[in-house]
Length: 240
Image (cartoon, rainbow, N blue to C red; front, top):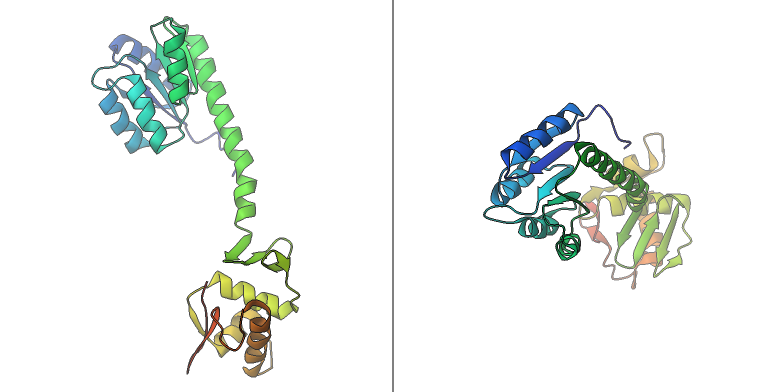
């Protein structure tokens, strides 16, 4: 799914100084972001869990829980980008923040223009990363796996122990249906309808024949099947 610029991205501002917090809220809101604010570390975690922000602008020096603790906890719960703000011009502080999981930092005092530019760049990188990951996620959904049995729906191939299984077209279709509906019991008539279609004029014996063929290809012992199970008086169930 491509980024929809009509959807407002959510930014959580965590800053205990009211003047800085209000300035950040005003300017980020004017840029079109949906803004949430918190004045301490505990409130920050509550707000993050409640609103699932797209980015967190996080002050290092906070009451109750400091920015390090907040970052450490957020990283256990999400991958939300974190822009850390620090009044300390100390490399150790910055390095520790980055090691804990902050994505970028700004040292106070900072210009509002620079902060807005950082926020925009970080959100853009996050969008691009998500968009790049979507084809991989889609590809993963084109695979069906049951133990050492795998079906690649894109290549229209089935594998057992990594080796291609030679299947007839309807054997393949039946196996795909079984894996997609693992654990469910289907009558022969239901399998005919779902795999062969309404126009098929053959009898339910066709299902038994294809099940027998499939068992010979994917079962360790086709006479004592553990994958395609016969449910007496009903039909078949795939266990995987």
